[in-house]
Length: 198
Image 1 (cartoon, rainbow, N blue to C red):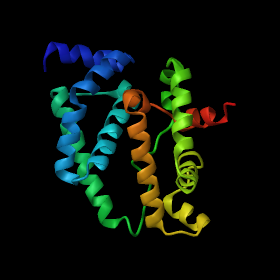
Image 2: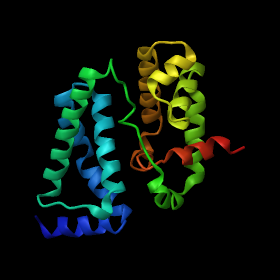
Image 3: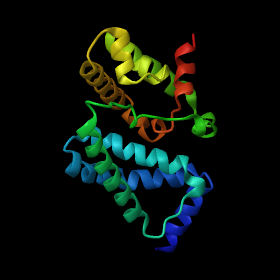
Image 4: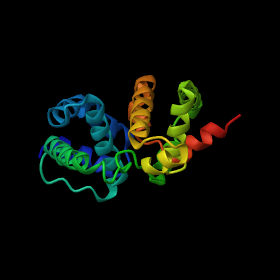
């Protein structure tokens, strides 16, 4: 492993956001292309890669990389793609919202963001969603309901919930693409607070 990589790893473990963003920008597009070879869906590929980076930051204190950073990331994406494919084979029996699960461990990072512009952008973007799609998005993201629970509450099919949520997330990513490295860190309670701002 190169000395520069050792330094980057230590910086990330110490919470250096610039080091993390450098790794993100270097490998993100390549990892998405690699993931797409497995799942054959660019939206799912982006979601898989974003989750890898989210977990990388979230668990940075215990980060152990014995190979190159590049090999570590590609291996992580490979494993996540296999899990994604396995999940899709059984999702009709047991649909879970695992890809988008987040927790509040990133709050320290969020507190340091210049939030005004980003808060407004997120609130405006969510408000642009069609009424039914917005309702489904809020129920899953802010009420922590599973797809099946939302389907039961709204008296619609699970497939409809899945499609609406996928469309909502795709729209959010497109609208907020300039903030993508930051959006990965957004905890659920942070966005909830944004929505409450008058």
